[in-house]
Image 1: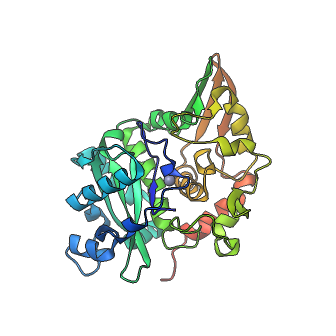
Image 2: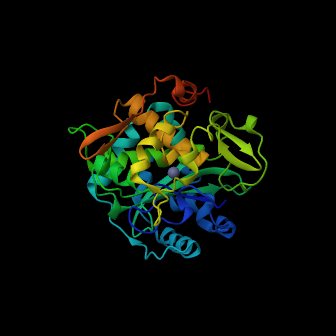
Image 3: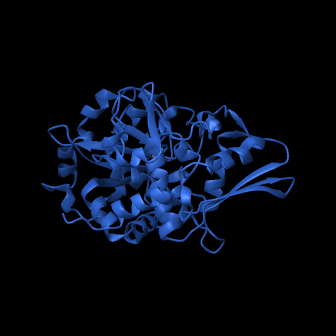
Amino acid sequence: MASMLRIFCGWALLTALAGCSGARPILGDLTQKPIRGESFWNAHFQTNDWRTIPLALRISESPSSLLEYVGQLNSLEGFPSDTRPAQMDSEMAGAIEATLRMLPVPIQKRLQKKLLGIFVVNNLGSSGLTESVFNSQQGLVGGFIILDSAVLAQGANRWCSWRENTPFTPSPGILLQCQVADSTHDSRALAIQMILIHEFGHVLSIGENYHPDWDQNPTQELSLTHYPFMQLGWRQENQKTITRWENAYPSRRDIHFYSKKPALPLDKSASIYQELESTGLISLYGSQTVFEDFAESFLYFIHCELNNNPYRISILKDGKLLYQYQLDWSSPRLQAKRDWFRENFLIESAE
Ligand SMILES: [Zn+2]
């Protein structure tokens, strides 16, 4: 698996590739690019240790070498993007800084040690991506995030509704709506916050044992006991990683976000969310891989459990509510996952 995660990728067009969550092309040589090395970032920040730079100073427009790197990445992946510099508008910068300040202190401290930067470009080829960075001994030290300025222009509910519809083809009379904010809190800043928190989840997983390294060959036999988060919901079968609920959740294998040819009709969405509700998984998006399960669980743990926002999917037929999925962290199906996040992210380590 290549080193990149295109997070919430392709608000626009380009996401039929498996970049968000599935198998990725092998991009091993890109891990050798200077920008993937810690020494590049120390030079960029003019320091001997990038960790000493305050997080707020790691948010900026993209350096030229980062633009070049994205161009190489897109070309290897078949994304026909023409990535260009972008201005970091004040609303976006404010939303990013506010997101960092809003996070619980133990999480801010971890980001201080793992997040090399948040950069903005135009025409990224997706709405965001996370890349890992290595030290001189090829050990993982952290990651950087790139956001596309143009695609972060919607309110949170509109963004979520758009995203949750992408695995489906339209069915007459059926409407799927997502609500992640009540009307007084819905904003572009909240959409940026949610996209960032998902990305922060990926960054925080780098170099940890929550799940395997996403660079790792996915066919390699894994010992689940090494990966405590993964153990909560995933298992290995015939060298493939699958969930613990494949029988109760048969639609899972047909869920492909941002596909140009979605495999699922919208009139099946109610039964698919019913299936999801019988598992310990959080969202359809997070059902795709253990990596996305982690990032989605992290996002909605912060968004719903800590910040008391909704994550609610309403499916309507001819204007009448057919089914509603509402994430509830107090439900028994999520108890183990909630406990795990509390223990691992809310308690300050003794380091
Ligand atoms: Zn992701």
